[in-house]
Length: 98
Image (cartoon, rainbow, N blue to C red; front, side, top):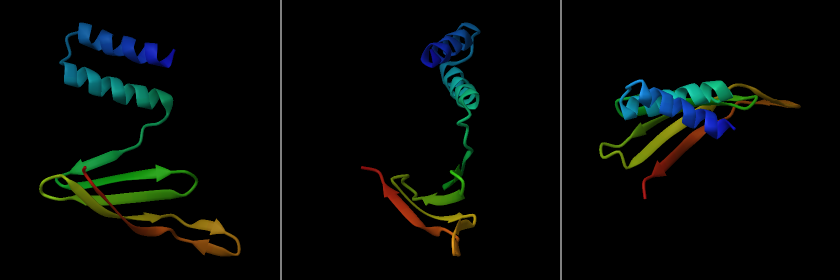
C-alpha cells in the first residue's frame, strides 16, 4: 500500500508538469517525512554531515576527496549511560568507491 501511495504521488507530480528530477526528489522527501524516516543529510562542497538517532545521537562528518571516490570522517555521540560508567562514543570512519 505504501508503494502504491508513493507511486501515485510521483505520477501526480509528473502530471502537474514538474520536471522528472524535481518530482522524484519531492516524492522522496514527502515519502520519507510521511514515514517518519526523514534524516538530515547535508552536503556542502566536499563535506558531508548527518546524524543517526537510536537512543544515542551519533553525528557523522566526512570529507570527500577531489575525485569523489573516497570519504574519510569522524563521528561523535551523546552520553551513553552504561552503568557504572558513562560512555561518550567517538571514532573515525572511511569508505572507498569500488
